[in-house]
Amino acid sequence: MISNKLKQLWSEGRPTLNGWCSIGNAFTAEIMAAQGYDSITIDLQHGALEDSSLLPMLQAMRASGVVPLVRVPWLEPGIIMKALDLGAFGIICPMVNTAKQAEDLVSYMRYPPHGQRSFGPTRAALVAGADYGAKANAEVLAFAMIETAEGMANLAAIAATPGLDGIYVGPADLTLGLTQGRLAPGFDREEPEMITALQQIVGMCRANKLRTALHCGTPDYAARALAWGFDMTTVSGDSRLLAAAASASVARFRHLLAARDKQPEGS
Figure (cartoon, rainbow, N blue to C red):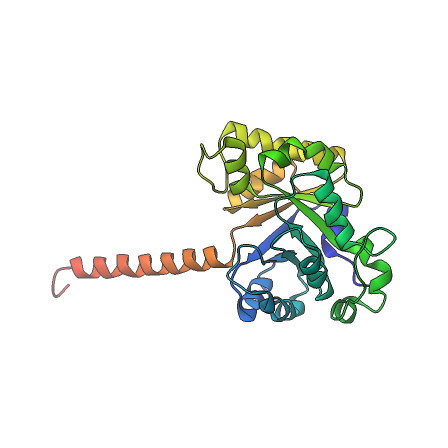
């Protein structure tokens, strides 16, 4: 089976950069995968895409060699196993609030005797290797998202879950949960209480030999997160990057047009 490149990089002490696809289009996924990210996550939870978009997006990403990850809509065995069978090398599961839910996530991702995943890697065995069934348990990554007050309260128990590979932090929901709506959701938190929470997650994960990942809005904040000890950062995503680039291009054009119109006639 093809080795998971994220695990290789982390074992060498190197942090990784994750891209994010929220647009349900194979060409968009192919473009994102070709930009040099270590991994790309297809977002089935909040992304503007249907389940039927997953396969062509994974196929489009294959040529780049980027590690394909999938954020599933919820802790539900069917979609988790389906995403893995289609070739995902890792699952990010939202709203994991208890140790029992973390245990369930792990069980859905591992073949017996370590879990209850059903065997049928239709595409995965083709693209990852004929020995997929024997090695998948050790290669696919299980990330539980901590993004609620309940999840933070149960952080120690969740982090101690056997077979869990890491914690992925969703800062927008975590801010809503920890402040009870007092602070608006968003990335790149500057509030001392939120930074303390992020560092607490890193500390607990390190104590349990788990990897930590954080969704960021800018490269600058991602660099700070790495300094705190995060192993993987996601910086923005396809829809936000497209909007930002288009906005900057239009703004530049309008600026030049306005400057031209201000020039005296004949100059």
